[in-house]
Amino acid sequence: MTERNYNVLVLCTGNSCRSQMAEAILNHDLAGRVRALSAGTRPQPKVADGAIEALKLAGLPTNGLYPKDVEAVMNEDIDLVVTVCDNAKETCPIFPRPAPRIHLPFHDPHGEPLESFVRVRDEIRGRLVPAVTAALNLE
Image (cartoon, rainbow, N blue to C red; front, side, top):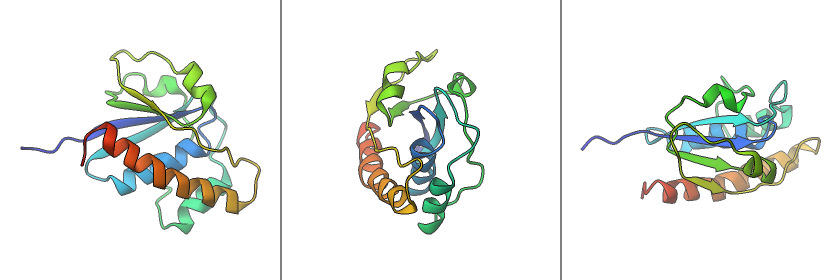
């Protein structure tokens, strides 16, 4: 039986911090089983420096991370939508093909010291990876 790759969309408002870290973590920790994408309902111009630095400190790749509007991923075949902020949960669009959703809010460290980004990165890794694994029955 061939293992299939599940497409997971991580959605947040600015797509500059939490969702970007979640995308990198999921693509690394669940490589070969999950392809993570991230997008925002109101994307910022760039990924937060603290998010990039926190990912690099954990040895995670940051190549190709950039804020995307949710419209850019509308035609992707999404298997699971994860909202990581309350605003994105409220404004989450309807996709052409219905996808299950889970909501896991994380603190927004934007504008805070690097330690806050590292704490949120570790919380995303500790809570999101098991939640996605369970939601997609990857055990």
